[in-house]
Image (cartoon, rainbow, N blue to C red; front, side, top):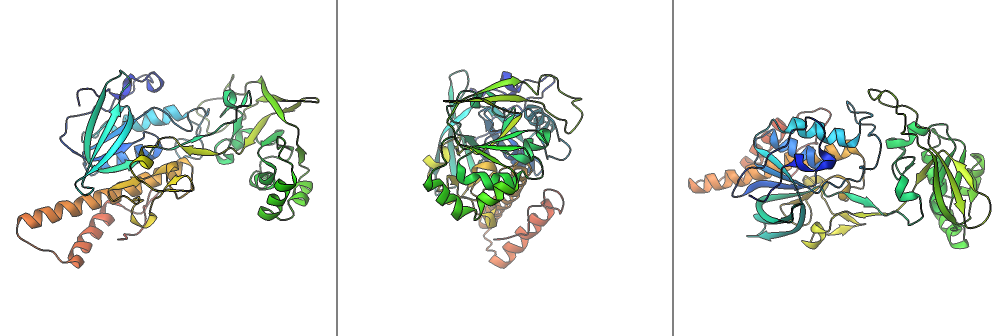
Length: 397
């Protein structure tokens, strides 16, 4: 592990006083976690609490990286995503059995009937390295596929957002635009009906007979619903979106969990006059940020890494787990990402404990019945999984 770079070196992560979680030499880790967003950090924390020997590898790319603030995370409502990650690492750094490095995982090789995995990584200084682990946790996340329309990518997460829970409250009662195909407009209005009433749906040329038929199927009486809410459908082709005012220029008291953000944009079209809006609620497709799971054989379901919720979010490959936005439970928010990380941490520890118990008993010439084994595993699960905010559910095998 001589080529590993400590977390603190990444400029985008280097907040004052940040504690690097130093890597340490190990012939084989109990687990390697790939991805340093909320789900990966949650899994690392859970495994640290039971003194598992774990390495987290973080590429430094995060879906919520462009956003101004995180919301709906109790105790951290209104902080920046970078601050949240720093605070999480700061706390985890006090546990000496876990470590983290900056790097991009390029491949994962399963060996010995999925009892060992070799993880190849490239680092910022151009070097490469390989580590081995008994379990793999994929916390690799998603990335949004943004259109090439000028102004969308530049302003993504700063007045143009996709999650009402994450960013909608800061733009409540402001003139809002929807950026979505026609067939999604009514469902999006329904989702934000308690936040905004002055809404224009910029459907960007998708108001076609086929789109109307699709809308009729997905949302019967969608036209009447839009009329009830006084929603204007704008079908002209968008040429660009221009920022007129930056709602983040003069932030409110940073200790506040929420405060209004007064952005202002103009929408230019290929023909006709421009239209001004204060913010946009968008619906764009997304994809896996990393292909390492798919390359090693994890099945994709609806573009997500298949994960069995009844078995700790294990994938179709034994010993490999998928958590956070990347997995197939199709829930994408920070509180849920934290839950999935904790749930998998509990399950991984239990599975490792089972394997260790089997080896110890085999070495002693003792055979354990399945009923006795399950009883022991249930006790482990219940002890490290108390009921509370991050309760990971009943024991299931």
